[in-house]
Image (tube, rainbow, N blue to C red; front, side, top):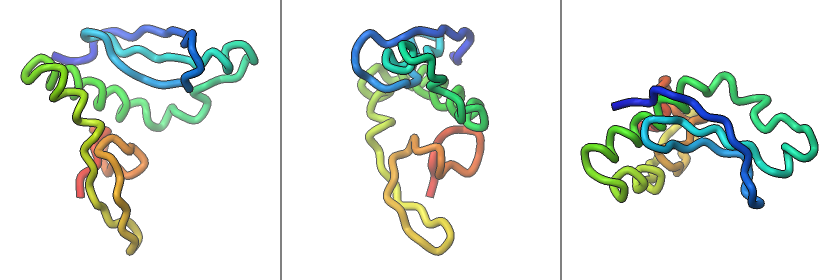
Length: 107
């Protein structure tokens, strides 16, 4: 019940680069605009790869246990976190605020 494969693809619409999953495969989607211009959509993402894989693996596990709606709702949950004396309201998947490699933000 985890990510066990990776696939690279290019968006055919105007969406920005993003990560998602299909079954147990993590999909890394480059934007069509970046592909046409030869721009690397993921130049600064390497430090977050462990978190991204973990995050998508959590989606896969929740989907298998609870269904697609429960899995997709994970990205809609917001929490309030305090960092450096300031409070922020962020989604559970805002990896800039995660304190570990799970890709999940906890207060």
